[in-house]
Image 1 (cartoon, rainbow, N blue to C red):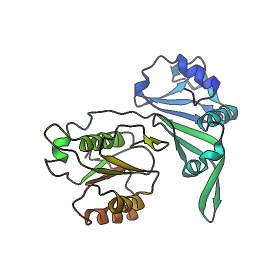
Image 2: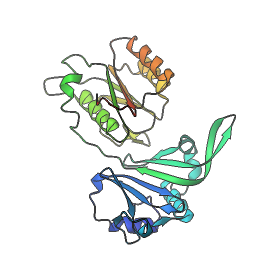
Image 3: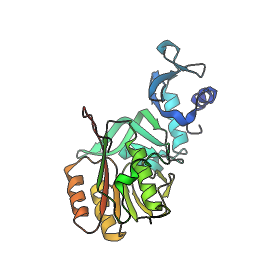
Length: 268
């Protein structure tokens, strides 16, 4: 609650919902405040309730956005320049705030952002145990199978991957744990805040936070001696080449996750 402007905070406190099922809160300048709740989109009404009638929705002003960004950054936007340049901030609790507005570029590289006019607050949720049915297929007593998790957006790929990492890292009563290296480019797996993971990723897990995937995989192999490497959102050829390097560099298992709009998506 404390990251929002006072007017929005008052309305959110009136909401009679299960906040464990709240997924996103979207603020757009001069547009209705939208919430994604149980995979459905709703307006936040001026009386502090979920509604589907646009005319009843609370309209976000520039002042609401400005005040919200001040709370998010503890009144020091400049201290978060690097994160804003990447288009997102991760706050305490592991919640990620996507940012859009006018970008400042130099030689086709984004150097910063001003006139921030759009925010997407993605609420972090852990679902411990969601990977239980898959673990017998993923690991044997001494080995972890190379695995790719594929599905369209908002189907729980990262949530599933996080729980797989936790279980591999902690081990089981009859099976030991593995040393896991995580390249968390978007701060979504471990959701580190000031270097400390906000999510439970296990006792044998090392994280490179906000690190490019390809470079991070190489770094982990060279420095942390992982038995398993896990990454989020595989996409570029460079990522694939790094994965090939990882697989050929020793007795390593590799986990990857990719979003896709295929017609017949595989869950695993």
